[in-house]
Image (tube, helix red, strand yellow):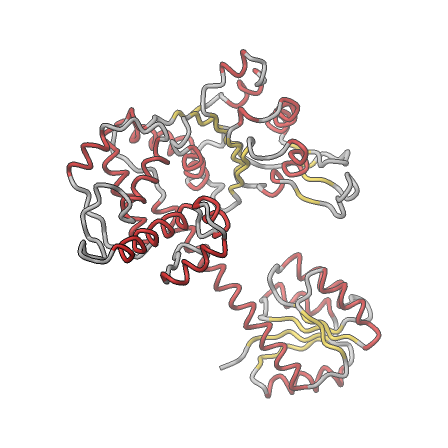
Length: 444
């Protein structure tokens, strides 16, 4: 079995032949070139597992080739061969995306080791990426809009219809109703699905960096701007921009967003050039914005530009027939995530669920269901891992372990935030996690 496919470039044909023979003997498939431009065509045509190139060559040199590979084949490892006096140049190459460099003359065995390690690392990175994409896809499948009520069926039909029309949309719904989920559904059911879905929380982005983050900046635009930076609108080209909590956007930036909506161009901070962007804009607000307009906190012209088409999400209290289904769905997901048995929801709990106000809407239902799946709900059937006759310290420890696991789940495995929520030092939390043998399976 071949260790990997390598493209080798060096204008020194004697070294090219010797290195190619040595790597072939050691199990690599090698394609050799004495010109970087010819090699680059082969790389684009059929990307190898690794590129090994001399740094100094006539015509297109190794540094130029590196830049082209990083731009066209991100993630493809490039290792440079350098002379002793080129170490500083090789270090610069690493900053530009090179994987490693080897000084000539080199130890032949070390060369094999470095290449093998780089290919293994690259393959592992690709596998992690594949698994992450699989998780995202699974999340999309399990994160569908749950419910069979008339209101939810109408919502799904409206999303399906609007997804096929390339028009900006305003989503209106209370906190926790699933506005971002609706925005994602509009994106993934449209022809823009292969392109990025980029979410911007307008209330969480500080005014001081808003323009730079959203529209990008050029080198030297402000102190610390050491290089050009693409903004979120440019990054989302071909896809969808989701402006969450649009009502919290500062007035000065509302005018800039209105210009993007009208002209489909952005201007990076510190630049006079207009850059066209092909994006669909989906905005979300907690209310219909009339109060914000009346108070002078939201531009009326921006509202009318956004609200040509709107999607209104019903609160949970208006879709009571969906509550049991939502609760069972989230409880089942949580049980699988944490390795717990499938929870049985008793009728008495269903009655209590239907009597709740659910001011936090679906988000609150989800949190309650996860607590139930972890055995932290007062109506959870008694399937405890300890008996009532167990010593009190054992029962206390068991309960403490469940609380910690639940907090880890809420914070997606973030131990610092979990410790803060529980009111204990991080070191103490880590000791308890080790003592109880806890493992948060949702971590990546």
